[in-house]
Amino acid sequence: MTDCPTKGVFLTFEGGDGTGKSTQADLLAKRLASCGREVCRVHEPGGTALGEKIRALLLSHEQDDMVSLAELFLYEAARAQVMAQVIEPAYAQGKVIICDRFTDSTVAYQGFGRELGAERVGRLNALATAGHRPDRTILLVLDEKQARSRVIARSADGRGDRMESAGAAFNARMLEGFDDIAAADPQRVRRVDASGSIEDVYGRVVSQVVDLLPELNGVRSEGVL
Ligand code: TMP
Image 1 (tube, rainbow, N blue to C red):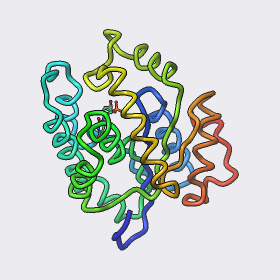
Image 2: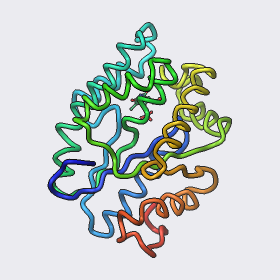
Image 3: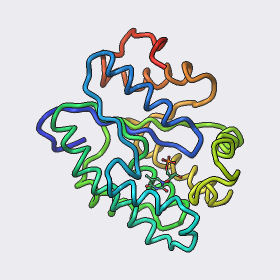
Image 4: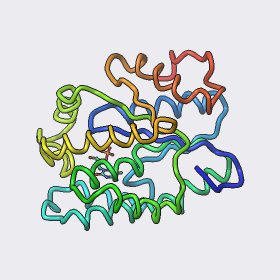
């Protein structure tokens, strides 16, 4: 993150649905806490009382007629709230913020998936975040079939929530969006192979953040699940 006087570390996890972001974010948070770091674990959309209400609206099939621009503004509204109430204060206190999805999801899902355009989404992202950006982003990449079967397995009715059931063409555009983001900003955005065991993936994640969090150096992941 830029423009903050005290040095926190702001990490985000990104990728398609079913790639294991929450599992890896939780694991990293636990590991860092056990090293004595103060960690702020958050997810988007959500992380505040208002944000969780917005999340419920965004994911419910009751809102299947939501237009794309309304969807975009709702994601940005949830983000403005979590930035002001959670992320900015935690960063100012020197905490490690681990956020499950952030602005790159909006570029990929709304900019590419809904075809609202990366530039337009980028402008709203900048407004909602006051220009703050993650220090490092882990983009988890998994074979589409594998990711889809995870989504189906965890969904109650076999179709997934409103966003997860947006269709194959939407999904392909969204994944292309993440590829574009990673190609444009390789220093911040690190592509990580999300296949294999949780431990395998965790090891790959750590190798991409250890320069920012040297306390992770040489620490094995066993026992932190
Ligand atoms: P989650 O299931 O990973 O918590 O995210 C909820 C859904 O919202 C997921 O399908 C991705 C989607 N999403 C967007 O479409 N745009 C965004 O800006 C964010 C943060 C999430």
